[in-house]
Length: 154
Image (cartoon, rainbow, N blue to C red):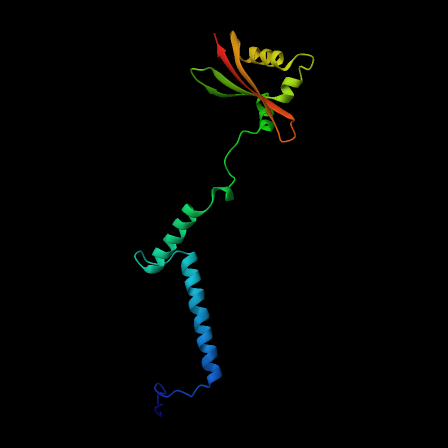
């Protein structure tokens, strides 16, 4: 058999157009590899890329305005229907605080709001009490949504 001669050191001369494409392809591959490694967090600890990712995360956490995230839980008065329109908010030395849905109070229509609230709470608490404060909760259009009541149980 005849021996073949290796062409390892012999390269065909590349045209300048092919060199430009190769360098552009090489840059694209490097960017793609960097993006994939960043997304999948595959840099070793202690490298400058790892430190840069950690810095970006910390900057996002501490520099992002709170207004961008409106995820604080709030008590909606429409949720009160599921527990019959009365929610005990707090209990302390000053008394107990309740939120009452306006629709529940309005269901006892001929009575004044304070008398209707007293009757609703009497059925719930079943102990003698006095109303310490009564505040009306209104929306932007001045529609009554509910009431905040603070009572003192005797």
